[in-house]
Length: 66
Image (cartoon, rainbow, N blue to C red; front, side, top):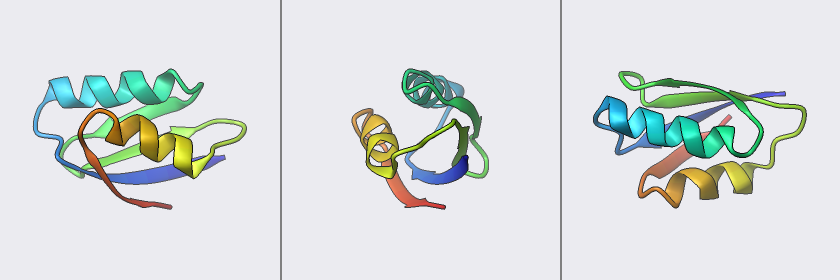
């Protein structure tokens, strides 16, 4: 299953690395695009609330999950 998170508040590569690390810890394959402000995650099962919490715990805002 693949989902795209629209994330607000990422400004640098350090932000990207923090988001990648947090989402990878959930067992996801992650690709973060700083310019687009998105993270594409892929895993067997993905819980939107867990994805959102992992990113928002870092201080970023998840605008949408699709």
